[in-house]
Length: 369
Figure (cartoon, helix red, strand yellow):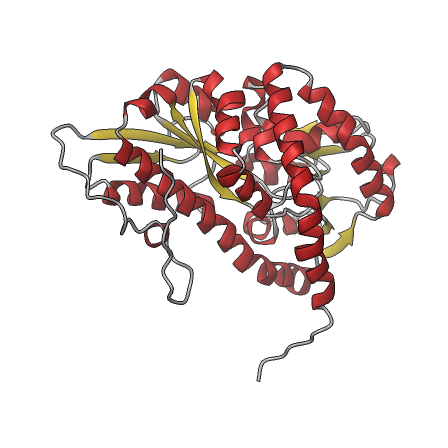
């Protein structure tokens, strides 16, 4: 399948997915007698950026295919529960699912590595890995195809915040006995420090925090966290998001249904997924700072750095935990090694470019005129 570069609108403002994925270079699909209608199920709610993005994706596919393929979207809880999206696609109830790869860790030893690896790749590096480093292909081979699924990245949260805590933490000992909501590989690391890690869908996070069922939670970043109202319950907000330096959201498709599609429909879905990926990452980048300012200035949120003791202790533990998880299966080992090798090609350049620039940028105090 050829991967043509999508065209963005050069005008101001944030383009819609349909605009970002404008099919000006796509051949016009022939009007076929048979039209396909797919069902998509999501692990995320209808409200907010992720619900909007999935709706936009479905709209684009319908318009670009001239109605040859339509996708009926069901958000979390509308057809199946959030963590049942993979089950729905595997059973044939749906042909497409949408979520975060680590939500499906119970089905695969390898799949959490697709989402994010603690102290691993940031969002831009993940995009480089997916589109130019064989990331999509290796994820299919080692995680999705064995489940009867086809994978495409469909969003990235960017670097996340570290999380919300009912009480301040500063020492490694503070992690022991803590009831903390953190999915994915980051949660596996915390378990080794005695943390009681809890996995909850988004809809259950605020109630659990309010009732005291959990002592803290990570979610995404300032904009999404503010929208969920986490600041109403706890005020201690920590950074950096060591656990998820960039988190891939996954679009996954019934592999048999995917293989039935002709090349044009595959290309349309691929284009839509790339645009969705860019749309979500760009939107989070655009709105997170203003949300962070509101959390601090209007809602009394206290920003806290984890500090060297915690960051270094967790970072030192991360390779041990990751290799233990990767050793559980041949697929997990394959995917882990692929990511680690790609990471080694990113570290120097990212340090010399983005890392050094961010330190240098504070020297220039620009102001509007």
